[in-house]
Image 1 (cartoon, helix red, strand yellow):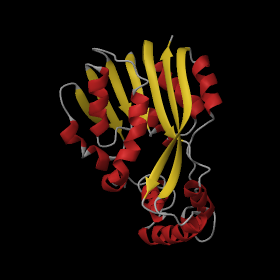
Image 2 (cartoon, helix red, strand yellow; image 1 turned 135 degrees about the vertical axis):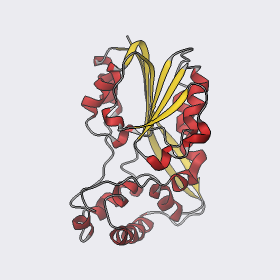
Image 3 (cartoon, helix red, strand yellow; image 1 turned 90 degrees about the vertical axis):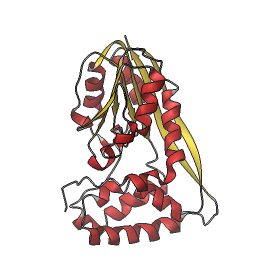
Length: 260
């Protein structure tokens, strides 16, 4: 399966840490100003549970959730309603005009080339429109660093065809400069650390199985992935303290800007 990414998002696995994963959404939403009667898009909407919250809080007339995963979109039926709909699509290629808000919570880190992506997102906004983005920024934690190490070692590097997953994320300073160059008259950019208390170190593995490790699982046969996961587990647990509960600090980047 090397070189080909499947759609194997597992909503139930992703939802195992629902409260912890949702808090950054609410923190990002707190930066957004309501757009009564406006048009909103939620890039990477997942199951749509939070898209409905976004729609209600912004007082939009129309909110469209976009996601590439059919498994996630299959869960959106219970989160539809007047003014809310969902579409399957590649957020890397999304285009529109005259939007009041583009909202992307924990999604565009999967999309490369932010130097090209952010101008495209800015171009979808009407004057005064808002762009709100939240991305994980935890690449230096063992949970992420160990995955890169294992992926580059035999036999996993061969099974992956040389693929090593890294989130596409730049520094906060880079985004501040980018927002200014794109004409955002106002901006709010910060790194926030979310300190999660997990039952034990093995739960870090369960956490990343619902997010980071999908980038590897989707490119490998089941047998190869199980071998990868076994080596990852052994290496990661040797790099984490054997504490219960385990403190798992997770950095995230929150961006908000208003088009001039």
